Length: 427
Image: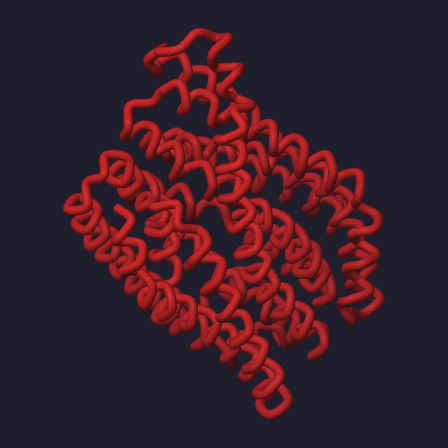
């Protein structure tokens, strides 16, 4: 089950990598910087509300393990309803959001101009992206893992084609990259909704439509969903804030270093999405064990997913160590950006050593819906990140920035391991 999820998840950051690669072959580094800042803003928002995916898989798997298919059915309705509301609010608040972002970020005038254009186009994809998160989480909870993979492949192929056409044929530059992403994300939502409709037809129909509508707004289940999602949102604020600090501090180092860190950042993103694929499998598999109250199966499956995670981490290290310079060259043709990125390549090469534990334990904790511990450990690790950032960056510059990121990931893994016995006692 894990490998289709891993492969599907790896395709997700292709959208951002393609955006960077396309503008990376335009003549100036500020094009890359603009996409870096614009994409960072979206990643902040998207990851903030990734609770729609993370908070759906575990409860869906638990309901399936308990044989409660009425709850399985209403789970997707609740998640899609929440996705539509949040997406609409972000669209309404788009101008205050972009003003606040550039009040915080000290970027060059060119970077700010093009990043603003990028954001104000792509923001209209918010309902589509959040809706897709909910759909993917629900399908993973039902162990339907091939459908999200197929959808992501189609979406990314469409994005690649449109980005190339809009930038190099129509010469729309950064707005063309944003428009390609916008169209691709709505195409993914449509495909996802078609899959949901087909899956609902296949599920056992153990409740009347009236009962299902009543369960949709069941106050007990709504409070549980809000509590789970609230913890995940607070946890994710810390995670995406690390990315925000990373890009904002990179911008302070100049357009060339910002562009170089954006290129290298995609190495981290691919690693995180690959490891998240293992975590998603853990949520679905271990979530069923939790629903059945089968501790022995839970412990066995935990060992298996950590083995998968170790394999994925080793593969990432090997690929980056061998093909890193070629990947950098593929993503940008600007000589000074290539040189700056090569100087710090070994940081993303080593990063899986720190990140494998954090991402995999996330899946274990979400399967058990022990989100409060996740929240608290991430908040503690974020404090560590800030301490390292403001201590080491003045001394070591960009290297200090990378050390702070590694410290954040390592701190999460260590703390989640320490508190795991508390999770086990609840199963």
